[in-house]
Image 1 (cartoon, rainbow, N blue to C red):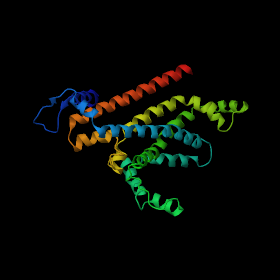
Image 2 (image 1 turned 45 degrees about the horizontal axis):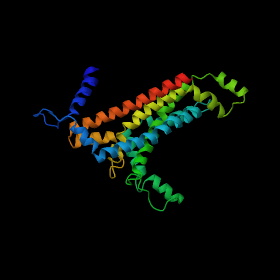
Image 3 (image 1 turned 30 degrees about the horizontal axis):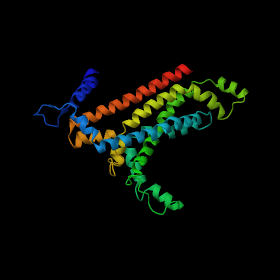
Image 4 (image 1 turned 135 degrees about the vertical axis):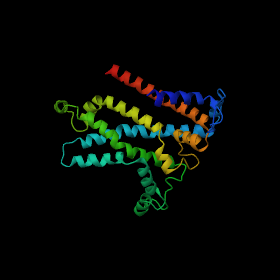
Length: 273
C-alpha cells in the first residue's frame, strides 16, 4: 500500500513545488509556489474547474434520486421484473470506451438522435451535440448519467430489500399508500444509502475523464474539458509534469472538501434522526 499509494502521493506533492519535465538527466528544480501562481493566472484551468463544477451540479442530483425511483420500480414483485433489472444494469458492464464511441455515433450529424428529431419535425437542421460549445459538456454528462443509473440502482435495491413489508402494511393502515408510503417510509430509511450514493457520484463526477477523452477531447474551445482531462493534457501531451502535479493537488483538495461536507451532513442527519 505504501509503495503504490502513499509514496507516489508524496512524490506528486513534492513535484508540485518544482519545475520538472520528462528529462531523466536533470533533477527537479525547486521553484516554491511558482506553479501555484501560474495556476491562479491560468484561464484554461479556471474554465476546466468551472466545467467540473457544472458536471458535479448537473450529474449528482440526477444520480442520487433517479436510480432510487428505478430501484423502487424494479423492486416490485411482478413477473419478468428481473429482465428490467438486467436492462437497467447492462450499461454498467459496458466499457466506457465502447459506450463513448457508441454515443458519439448517436450524436453525429447523421446519427440516430438527429434523424429521429428531424423525422418527428421537432428540428429542421441537425443539432451539433458534440461540436457546440453550449451543448458539448451536457451531451457528455448524459452519457455519465446513462452509465451510472444501473450501478446506483443496485445499491438502492440492497437497501430496499432490507426494509420490512410490515412497515408498509402499518403505514397503509394509517392512510399512507401509493407513492406517499415511499415518502413516509422509504426515504427516511434509505438516508444512509442516499448519502453513500451522493459521496460516490460526487467524487466520480469530479474525476470524470474517459467520456471526455473518447467523445470530445475537451473541445470545442475547452467547453467540455474537465480538470482531470486538463491534468492529463499537461502531464502526457505538454509534458509539464510539475504543473500537472499542481493541478492534481488542487483536485485532491476539492475531493477532500467534498468528502468533509458529506461527512458533516451525514453526522448532522444522524444526530437529528
